[in-house]
Image (tube, rainbow, N blue to C red; front, top):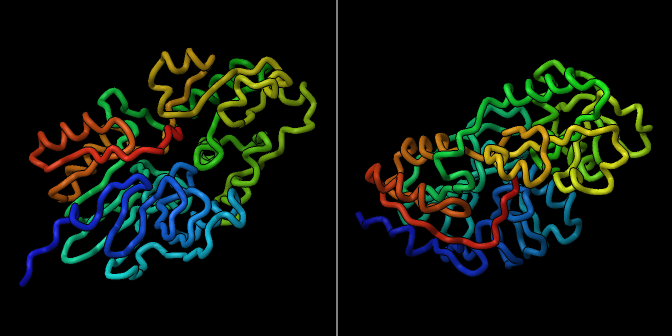
Length: 337
């Protein structure tokens, strides 16, 4: 019986992203390539212009929504757990728990099994399929919050803080900065789970993707466009908007808004202060330090590759646990939190 081929012999970083040589495709390439396997719909992972794209139905729908005809020349849908051959490589997508359609990418070739996590989290999230651990020889993990300082509090407690502030300031509007894909819909779901059933007002940039989520069966409760609503009618209401809108002229039409921002980066008080955030909400769609370390030690992988984030600390931790670990230093990924 021949020995398995070491993964670094057939899967390697390149200027365009992580390249799988025997399948001749890239994983989450950072520029247009002939063939891409895409983990999820955030723009730093799902770029336009690829010749062919393999992804989940949710991710492909998001790419079509955002890019139209530039979503890709050929779009191939894969269900979770479906095994697809690309050249000599078997590719399977497994839930990542990050956003709608997000997937870990499982690659099997020449006796080796590699899992590329994409972005992921372990916390329950009704807006997407939960993370499912995958056995592997090599686990390629994100490290967006790969420092011990990043330990996210309970989502429910953060939403409770928002609702408490709403009761304290009934004459003010609460303007919550959320990313259009994932965070907006998760905050809506958390509000509904907390019993808040009033309409939530949305900035125009958040409406299309929220409707897409609803089309995939994700219930978000009553939402209304903020455009055209009288200023006084927004007193005591919650308005969701892209983070950039907090400091934009658009927000000046709101009645004395309490500026809030839902992000894992709100753990860092200086970041909140610099952005003029009055109510920082530590709600993240990425694994925190405890989730990252539990994942890399719990999968049984003998080797950990770390990418796009605070790589050094997680590499050091994994090595201290007796695992082979290295930083991939892939470029082109953003802080989409």
